[in-house]
Image 1 (cartoon, one colour):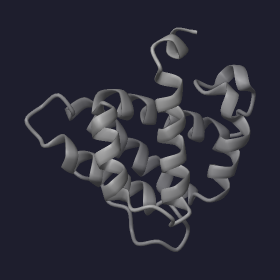
Image 2: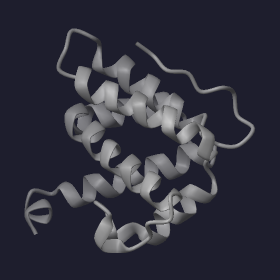
Image 3: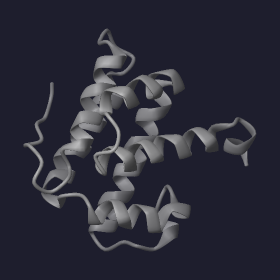
Image 4: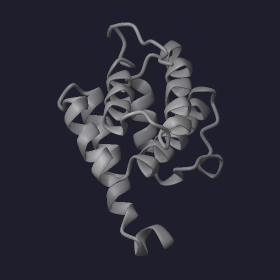
Length: 134
């Protein structure tokens, strides 16, 4: 209810649609990064961090909604998991964790979000190699 009152549910939905669209190859990650920066890079990365945790739980077989941060999206998360190369998921979760920790630092938040979302686009099977960034 608190998220709804603050208008964050709509923002959460936009962020999820961006991720789905990037993974489908329909949206440019750089364009999404600009929207994420406008929405608030801290909030966007924190939400992505919890989404990654949910995806990892689902990949490990924990598909009970009460075990997830986004229980209302179990079906959408399972669809995402079906389009993600599991071997890259762990590396990407580290990228997101690092970005979440560094977002308040001296690095340019737009560039950091671009890097994170380009990394997201590389989770698809057959895409170029995912790399950790420092």
